[in-house]
Length: 167
Image 1 (cartoon, one colour):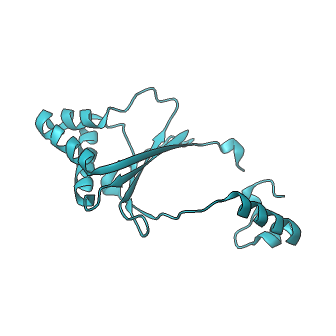
Image 2: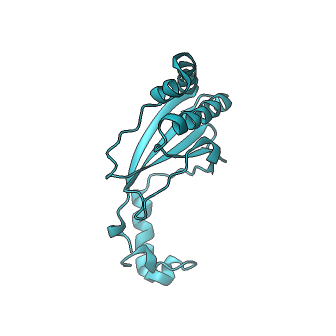
Image 3: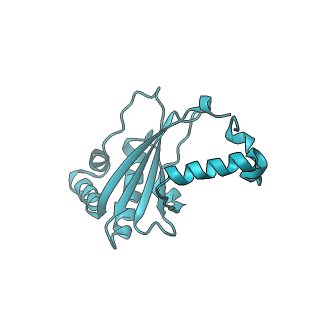
């Protein structure tokens, strides 16, 4: 067995790395344990996010948010997210995220990735509050409603950065 993914050289196949017998066993184990897979592609949208300025050690974790936008609501969602960028720059300048729009096979699925620093004790201002503080109560409510109204479903996942487990 290999000790780290770094042992698997670019261009090498499993047989070259592990030998025929062990490679066959790994393939069998994967086939038994994986019920299915899904491929999604996304396009980085710098205009819909606020690029993180990471510390030299990088982020401690990443919160990934998958947003299913209602059918035909992509333009409304993107318009409201662009206004969130503007609002955040005004009233929550430390809040950063990377935004992705659907690519091939992702239809109406957007993705937002937020870097998390465990040493940062601040709590991000809620989205409706950012809109209201930046644009006033009436306009802020309009943008919050547009973002919410275009959204069908939200899923979140956390990825914890553990460089001690990689080489």
